[in-house]
Length: 244
Ligand code: NDP
Image (cartoon, rainbow, N blue to C red; front, side):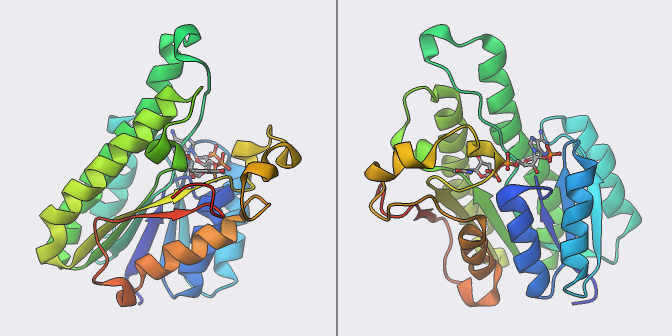
């Protein structure tokens, strides 16, 4: 595994951090992407290093195509012997509001981070992965992209867009031993939902609780493993029974 890397976008906090740690425990060296929170990224590196693998933090904004090319593309160019075998597209934001009241900027930033960010990073990594004839691409989407959530037209559209891309890309890449799957979490305890009071929501969740980032990470680690070779183009929900 000396030269095998997993890249996790938005790996500095929350679900992304938990996935970094699980993939490190599985033996992957980890590239931790983040947007600006260097302290959180450093904490993730410390957790990864405890698993005895290599790790590096790469600061770039996934929505900025030029920055993705220069920082991620630059790393790939400078480290040609290192192979990104696993890509976890996890970086995402929410900026909720009813459509009638939504500012253009609210629409643009959510679409640009999730959907354009997905394209920018995946495009950068895809060709070398195809040449290597092995890969795992895991996209963190949302129940909101499956069901549609009022107050989240921007977020639902971004996540639904990634679901469509997941299904299409899976069919393009299957012959090259690259699987492409999506994970659709319900409510997971992270900074993203820190403004929501769990007690107000649990009555509608059959499992009567929010999920843990580690639970999402275990699923991601399985999809990243060689055991999941025949699973591709799927959207797997992890939501305590909230929606199926
Ligand atoms: P957090 O808000 O806890 O963490 C977000 C992470 O994304 C941070 O690491 C942040 O970096 C990074 N990030 C944000 N914008 C960018 C950007 N433009 N470029 C690079 N990195 C960026 O989120 P969660 O862990 O909760 O969410 C992770 C994913 O899971 C998201 O895609 C989210 O939509 C999805 N999800 C979450 C659910 C939940 O209930 N928590 C439910 C369903 C889906 P930095 O630290 O530098 O700011």
